[in-house]
Image 1 (spheres, helix red, strand yellow):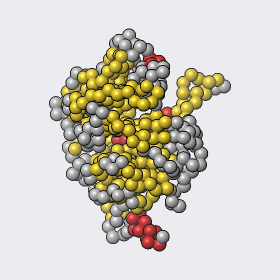
Image 2: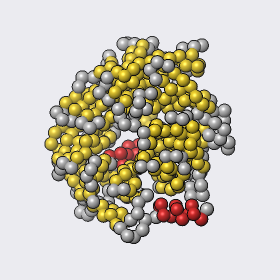
Image 3: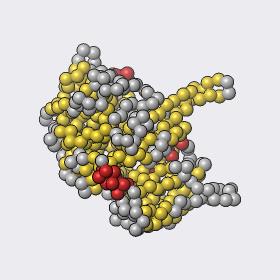
Length: 481
């Protein structure tokens, strides 16, 4: 125990022999055209970057616009292009995934239309070199009779971004077995294989499952039975283009929860969080969150659970529930996984003494935890990070965190009253000069908040871009060291 304690102190506590100085340059400010706009930074270079923004979760059937704007090294806009997601009949598609490649963005969207009797997945490709967008391509489609029996699609991207998997759960049919169809494409939208299967499960309107695609192109489905009971069971179904095989995933004391597929030095593995199935049964829509008992590592090559670790005295299990895998970094033989409690609750808005038909959404982020294991599944330590914070409606953009592995350290960006930068798993201290902004009409400076989802590092350069906000104003930022 003493050796473990000494090791954790050496792992998590920085010494005073070296200090890394991070400085931030604040660029021009802008205002959103709509408070529901969400922004991301893509194609970051030493000479500028591009922003992608669009309306988030807006129920518009006739128009869904994507806007891409290029910025130069002074963070000034130089070129903008708008395009719409494709339509089926009069219905515009819903954005599901954006895959960022070296010089391309692949936009994947889904749409269904009762009149057309179709449910389909579309792809459009933005080319950063000539600032153009291709016509949409239908990647997958099946027939529907109505919206109540429309089935659904699940999309997955391989860790190296070379493969795109689409799994279609076919519309519900009474007294039949579940039917699925699987498509795998490469990142240039060439079909690799297509497979139809009837599974050994009853047809339902919805299923509890997660889908993954390996770099090799094999597709995995983590299939849950009795998901919200103590009799919960998880099985892994593997599709390879010609056949499907099923193997046990859960076991006594181990029920996998949220997880992520990683490539650990050439080996495909699942890393995530688990429930032991012992204390309480899982609760549907629980305000406290689903029970989570620790972290695990599963080797997909051998189909073995090589690491299962319960929380230790450093963490508070009652706070670490309904954990989502925010990010996983594989550095040599170390795996760093960041998990965060995420819950969303809704209620009707109050207007005076009456209730509105509009909804208020409360988003809870945290508590969080950093898990360090090696690629053999040996635990090196748990590190609690950030307590719970709540945000209402669009303010959720300030929630959660961003992680970047740079300068041989894991750097976490989050809002702890204002922009904060944390360093883990590195000797030496980091000095972060918190930026200040001067809002329009103000007579003094203020410290802004960071939008964690916009943090983007420039490969092979000591440079990170991000967007910050204060009130209704936003700023571009460039961090260097």
